[in-house]
Length: 217
Image (cartoon, rainbow, N blue to C red; front, side, top):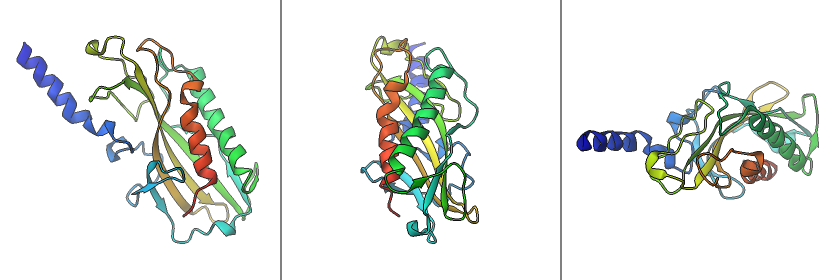
C-alpha cells in the first residue's frame, strides 16, 4: 500500500510540476486566443515574466483611443465553495475598471471603437488556490476552480493565483496587434476552507492594469 501511495504521489508530481512555473505553460492555455504559436518569454513593464507576441505592424502612435472590453471567463466558470460566482464577477469588473483608470492617463477611453481605437479583450482562464510551500500544485487552468489542499497540507496557508490571456486588436481592421498570457499571485489565504475574495486577488489585478498602461512593444 505504501509503495502504491508513493507511486501515485510521484506521478502527480511529474504531471503537475509545470504548474509551479512563474509563467503560464502551454498545457495551461485556455484556447481563448486564436494563436499561441508565436508567444515568446518576455517581461512586463513591471518586470514580471510573461508570454508575449507583438505584431511588427503595431505602432502605438496610430491609436488615439482605447476600448477595454469586460474580461470574460474562458471556459465558462465552475464556482466552488472557495471561489464563488460573486467573487468571479467582482474580479472581472474590477480588472476592467482598473485598466480603464490606468489607461485613461495615456489615451482616451471610449465605449465604442473607431478606426483610431485599440481594443483590449481579455479572458481570465483560471482562479485557483494551492497549498503554500508545497512542490505539487493542484491546478486545472481550463476549469475555474479552487484546488483543495491535500490531507498532508493540513491547515497550511493557501497561495492564490489567477491567469489571464489578453489580446490587443486594431479597431480599423480587427487585426491582432499584441497577445499576452500571464499568471498573477494574490494574497495567501489562511487555509483550505477560507473563501477567496476580491481583495485577495487585487494585487495581481492592479499590477496588470499598470503594466497595460506602461506597455511598450
